[in-house]
Length: 127
View 1 (cartoon, rainbow, N blue to C red):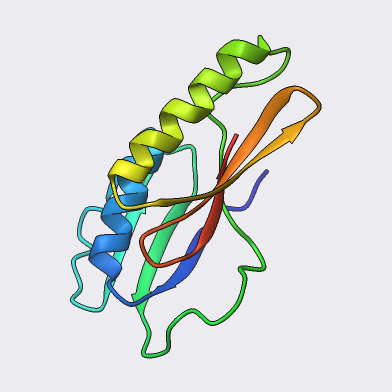
View 2 (cartoon, rainbow, N blue to C red; view 1 turned 90 degrees about the horizontal axis):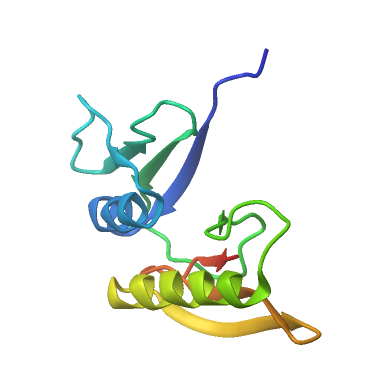
């Protein structure tokens, strides 16, 4: 049996970052968790881990050692053109919500993923 776990994240503005990630992942605010220095989001279907955001005084100073990959294209086998369209559409949506596109990563002629930064500069990928 798998262990239930929560991904803990440092943040300058926990509510803003939680709202961004809730939109990005289709999560919702965790019921009963409304703290001025913290926020938590959960998978409304109860399958994915909770993600908590805690206000910390120091800012981000280096590359993430771990990051989230948003997998919009599902599981292989993929139609390369449709997969590229889905990745670019999600990246554009997230950019409109405060994320920043860093670069597209291609393998051969196919788009593999887009590296982005969330509103506080944390790296993540859309694949």
